Image 1 (cartoon, rainbow, N blue to C red):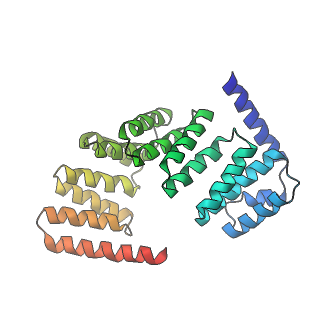
Image 2 (cartoon, rainbow, N blue to C red):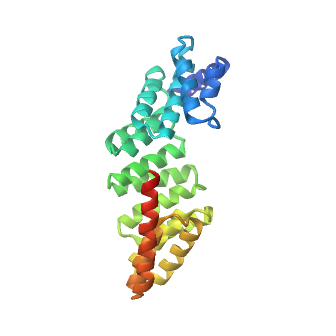
Length: 264
């Protein structure tokens, strides 16, 4: 009953917010606008002093998203925190702040925020998936797998969750289960390079470098700017004794990584 009451309150606030929007709040939430224009519109709306609390909370949240897209994680956290202060039942704000804590490497705060998001919205598979990712970053692979299991139960069509669970199995040394999960991730999303890259690493760890090279080839075809895939393929060529091809891949990996650093 308490959960139902909270959901009714949340949707009522969301509905109220949508009817009390202004041109600035609408533009603030417009992801098609430039980030700086979004932030400016959000700031005008926030400082106007005229927004009702539900709309103000949503506007802080939208500005937090814009700051996050801009790479300003501290300001993003500040805005998500204000959104939560104004609406402590704002599950998406907890989930988004969890993601920024993860980017900043503060895994303990990330777990706390993801857990609160799940408490508020336990049927949201994405929230559960995200906490699994945090557990994985913390090296707690059993808890990561438990969360990935639950996320898959809630949404069995999410390739990213199978891919993430595969990584957790790989770190536990269970390469067969890892490969099975990568297979499913690839079946669900054959255009995703990450699962091919991860499966290649598992094949390499199992000593099957021919299959590893085939998967690295596909990962590179799908994402030719991925220096890690070239480096991984270089390792597989080296294991097969083909040092010329290995060195060529290592060189390309270094070139791509150097260009990536130049763009940062």
